[in-house]
Length: 326
Ligand SMILES: CC(C)(COP(=O)(O)OP(=O)(O)OC[C@H]1O[C@@H](n2cnc3c(N)ncnc32)[C@H](O)[C@@H]1OP(=O)(O)O)[C@@H](O)C(=O)NCCC(=O)NCCS
Image (cartoon, rainbow, N blue to C red; front, side):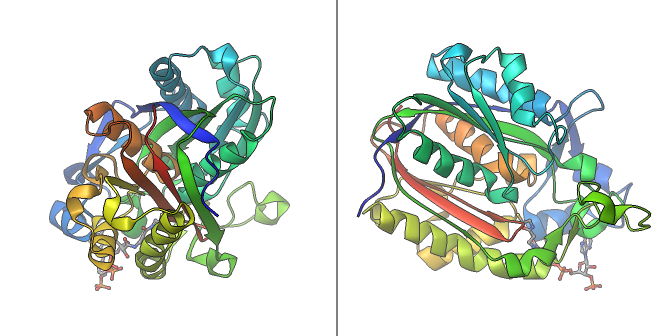
């Protein structure tokens, strides 16, 4: 069995907040250095939302750009899927907020959370929805304001994350060939927002910081293994060939994870699109932002084969193999 052959990406967009925080500035918050951050992660700077910008605002700008790129209007969108770990609010969901700003009055609206794999999970859900006769266009958005849940006194996490949003418009057609996704919930504690208010009443009265906590080493071990495995599985499910991949757009969590995958898969680093130096880890937005950059760079042309691959909190993972057909 090959892939679904029912969905293709017809437009992409992205948005990074104006405010840039360099590693040098980070030195004022925690005991760290630019040199440590660059050598251990590849990150040189990240973008931070200001107090007027929330998840829906970032996602809206990315979505507008994707609609423009696709050449369709907001009223033609049948579904909006927003992948986020930092929802604008619980109710209404971020998707409804963006629907209103876009004027996408014909769209159903759903948020999903699979942490840094969220955009891949969103593509998988969109691919399935596009099999329905009445659904023709879907906006998949990854949007995050991680800085609003980051502990800026914890050097093990605060240097890693950034804010941003990316979006893609999907339509019926031949593009996506193979998708895999999965999770290992038993490792959920490695990366969590323990006692974050959405944990219902349990969090009440807690003295614990309601911010991201991470066992970086455990997540790293999971990532270096699952990135190549998920990528291989998606390409194989789509009857593709690793050697014929023109581009790989991985989740941008740590340059060392990407380099390890390049070695393990015996695929040159030149084929991996990397922007972590400018963005840090933007969780569910990261692959969407990187894909938009690659598409706008002119290096991605119709007929080329590419793979998108993500992993993250949950722990979750997913990969999509597709032929570019915009
Ligand atoms: C977080 C990560 C960069 C840490 O890198 P590492 O090489 O494993 O570093 P370690 O955790 O072993 O820490 C090494 C030392 O650096 C210190 N350190 C940690 N963060 C630091 C920072 N920002 N600046 C300076 N030193 C730091 C540690 O305290 C430790 O010091 P010690 O040896 O005195 O105990 C790495 O584990 C990683 O990228 N993990 C995956 C995380 C991830 O991708 N999460 C998101 C998933 S989507």
